[in-house]
Length: 252
Ligand code: SAM
Image 1 (spheres, rainbow, N blue to C red):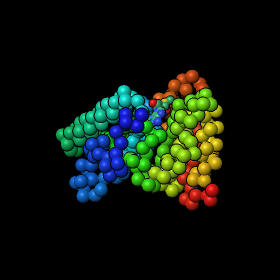
Image 2: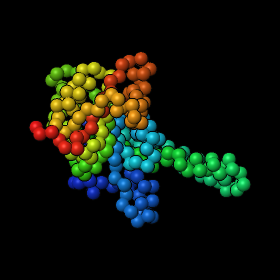
Image 3: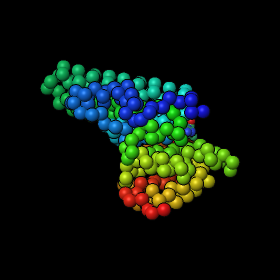
Image 4: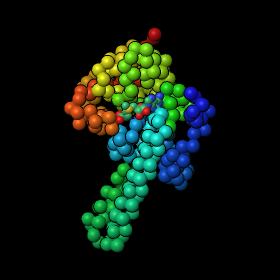
């Protein structure tokens, strides 16, 4: 039911500064606009991928969208705790360096702490990613979109509930930059076929060859989502595919 979800009239109506207060503060101090969200994890679950991404991309605003209230609250609390821990470490290292101005190792530890991930660039929201993406994100805003271990909805009559369909792909593509990437990982072979079929038959996307995945630092993080870690623990198979939004969509 759409009424269960808060959604903004347009992306400018989203209180981004509440989600990313440190980014808002440093942007306003520098009198520049806040950097927009670039990566979105659809159905982020308990947030492990968000935190992995924040380590690889400590300055890129990253948002998880998750439909379950309790799960979102968990991710938000984890984020606040990680931010607090990072702040404490940075402050402690800076204080130590200040107390011993001639101590080279304290100075380099302080410098390392200052460059460590702050988790100020991640947040998660409760929402239905199948409904309101264009309300949250502007046309061609996002450079990466993640579909990790999406619910399989095995029964044929439930396939319409799958997070990827021809209509939804057009909506996801709308908010993606030309040349942006959509990452898919699942342990369900049948769902992988569905995803690959849909993305491949869309004029808006092209699949990246296996070789291209090796150079992408994001790919190894895909198996470190909560679900990915579970599958690894069971020695299960995982399938990965990455699609690029075409610079020039094919004629239909
Ligand atoms: N991506 C996480 C991972 O890899 O560990 C979670 C995978 S879990 C199997 C699928 C998640 O998608 C669940 O947390 C579920 O609540 C969420 N989800 C399902 N439909 C959704 C929707 N329409 N919008 C947002 N999240 C959704």
